Image: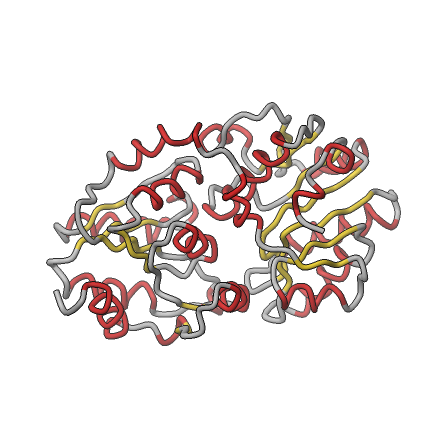
Length: 350
């Protein structure tokens, strides 16, 4: 069974779709846009989306005609579950390193919806990793125990869910289905990204990531040290989420753009598929330095070289899936390794 088998009218109609959508995170918005594309392509007409900020939906998505409810309104979400036959959890490494209280509450609600309300629950393209917390394991059990189908995005997720739900199959992350959608309607939006950057030669796309306090590392500091010692190389820097989610690093990127003439900052909002097409358009001149799971998938699908940095099991699973065996734990990334990586791409020191 595959993701596309679930996103068919006979299964997906009369469903509430829930994910970590609406926060502006590149990966989460990418998953939602792909799901909507696939659903519309296959004729799904009755799909409601739980979205954290419906007022900002148009900043990141095309309108496929699917109604939206405000995920911040817990009563609205509960009412939507009551009024729909199915609940679909659409992708993301929910039960992993970044597991938090909101995901636990969602997990509890899914268990309640299945066991008490008798709803059908589908977990598609999801991730469940041993790097999660004890509460994360409880949440995964609550979400997955009564699921009608679980489509794991990698081997570790499959093994973890299969222990307590035999209706588990292994597929891929939903982002891999970018190859199955029509990207034509998004091509004009790439111009908005081109207007912020100027790519005429090898350019390094650097994305910083926000980590929980207990998982802090020196990635940002090492990247800045590397940039400072390479004035002849060109960089695009980005957060891949809204500035208000990470104001400290947003200000830092602004300061980099002001301080270093060879640095341009890419700012949102933008449709996530536009960024994917931006990578495709400039594939010959781009290279990626970023820890984000979906940034790496974007680079890989666009034939853009990337630094194989690992900060969680989900990234290790992704790199193993694509055959990348030489990886670097994020705690070991330093300016020297970044220099070595980019020197190899450039055929020698700058």
